Image 1: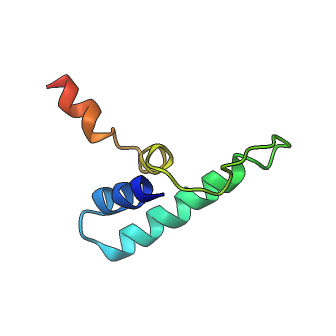
Image 2: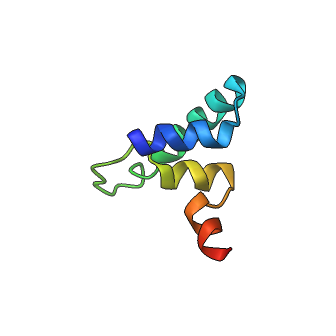
Length: 67
């Protein structure tokens, strides 16, 4: 998704190798969401929630709200 792309760019911090690794790991997790027999219509779709979960970074809005 568009928000997933923005999250990839944010978490990569300008490093293309990091961006590709984050995308690959996020897609692998997203694919796994539908592999347990659940009929998940968004399985395989990388969105910002998955990206921040994989990269183990808090969403910038969460940090902003804390400050």
